Length: 341
Image (tube, rainbow, N blue to C red; front, side, top):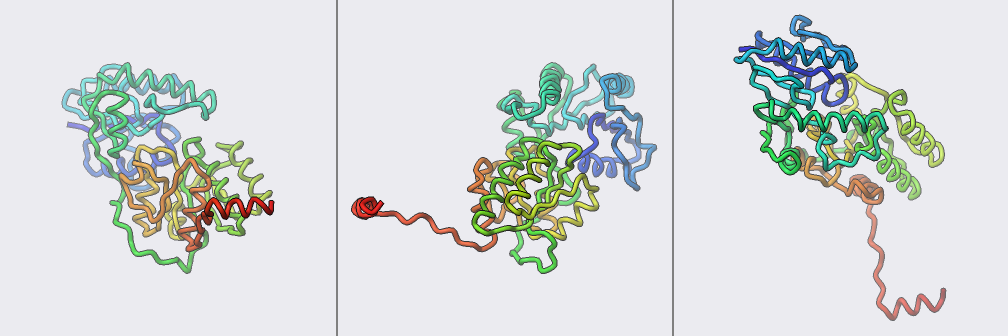
């Protein structure tokens, strides 16, 4: 029996980190091979002999990968489709689909995505539904994702989360005296990552004279419009915000050691790997009050991700800054105040 990891469209972000960890584990088992994106760089420890085929990022390359998978798999093999899509053609192997992209479930609005991305997602949604019958099981990494799969696809998914390290429980909080940055957000620039509401919260804080530093792992070459908007907000409101560009997993681990807290306003995730990584690094977490977060961690503070005010208030609470509710007047006091307007 062999393990075939089919990941012809994974090369960046959290999916890349999970795939590399899986490939490293598979390399130690001997009987395994992988079909990989040509852009994916393999670190030391993962032998090139594991790679069955490299796939260029094109329609022709993807078709070649699907044909190779059909020819490669035997009845006794386990095929793990890592890239959210089932085999385009029938496979003799026992196929498991790891479904991580919530955009492929029809409950998700695509209006904020670029036109090319919207078309790709619509094609992949059709692919997923048309070929879902070719898989033996669907695997997800959180209970909330399993519920959404059941509601939208009508099937029961297995919940099998994995990461480089387990997520420990919350530790007693201690401010880090050696920190370089107050808050860190490890995320790419897709609309659901919710950077705009996060920056709006930082603007509200600045208006109150509070200017914590914030590090974002955004790359201006990949999301130029968003990064330009952030740069304009930084200039207009004197915000302390740093954009690092794309980073290696090693550099991201260093950032966890340099930050005082992880802030995580993403609207939805299949897993939310930085939540696990930050907690493993002993980092306090301020995150959206959403199911996918609570599936993984118990954050120190939480907020409504759709409200910049809620995000700013959570930051204030974390910083130990009290914000008192508005004083309530009696009707008589209201009329007294009204008289002097």
